[in-house]
Image (cartoon, rainbow, N blue to C red; front, top):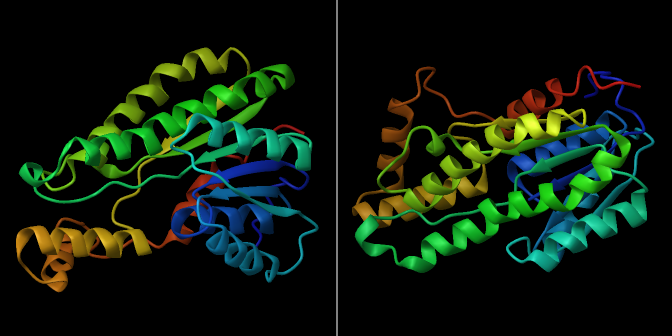
Length: 249
């Protein structure tokens, strides 16, 4: 469903765009007439995502997929160079790719932290750095970092993800004034528990580490949510699009 935000003709990169929040944002942007490049590691999942997006009512926009490992600097460079080559310009960047293991701290080795930091923390930072010269030359751009709520409310069973998200909040706030000098806006969205495959995987990991059922983990998580319900990816997508309401012509 289009909100008619007058974004037709704009171009976006969405990382982690093959599922969950990333896919929901990619679909919402496409429906607004935005040309979208979705990036993720799994080519098959990307192909399925493209088919899903192309099945939406036609908006005249283009959707492409880029298979890349965003935990590696060369993967980030591939995403930016491919998107610019095939779509011509970039107006919007949605940093969303990332995963981290859940579990008791004593059971998590250095690799659990390094994997999370390399993919999400450095992945976001590298993508901003890689796209910045292009956005600066055009003196315009919008960047949205999807940063989980554990960055503000740490959980003992999710420290690799929590430390990653806390660092990204610091980075986003720290870089915002420098980017503003070039008319580039950067914002963070910190979703709570969201109905995605990723949330299901984390629930299973937490259940295993705590020796309880997945249902018990989910019930405990819901207790901490004032509204008592899990957010849908489409709700996060609508929030992201609201940040582009005043995009200049």
